[in-house]
Length: 186
Image 1 (cartoon, rainbow, N blue to C red):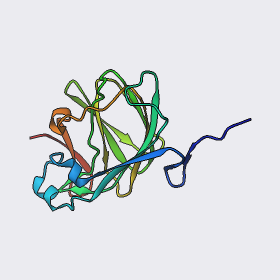
Image 2 (tube, rainbow, N blue to C red):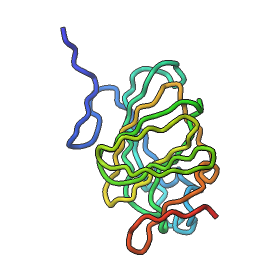
Image 3 (cartoon, one colour):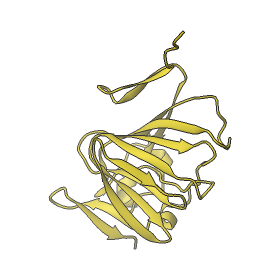
């Protein structure tokens, strides 16, 4: 007998469908201290949805050696002041573990910092990104629509959410022509 998968990817909606799918939402109130323009941040409704992560609950507990997780991040478009919406960003708690990202829809950037050196990669539909171990990483939506990115990471990786300025020495801002520009943290 051939068993059907419990989870499928819907390429039209860019979402996971099926049983055992978990979702986590991050709202503006969860990103206090992440944006340079604190006055603009204070103007946001604290319940503004910044991004949503959906992932397959495969029954593995975080920290289990040898397993994998699969999920999709949906990062909303927008700016706080002139800084693009972004994900919280993190190191892995088990620092030497890597991760893959795959662009599904939208336009954005993957910011990666290792040993104080920052690299930005364009995230577009079909782009594949390897995030090495010991690297802080976050997504930035520079487009006008939703940025959806799938990810595959080890169950033992975990997350270490340090203050943003400790992980990322640079910021990505929108200039007057809506083009992303890089600025060093003050």
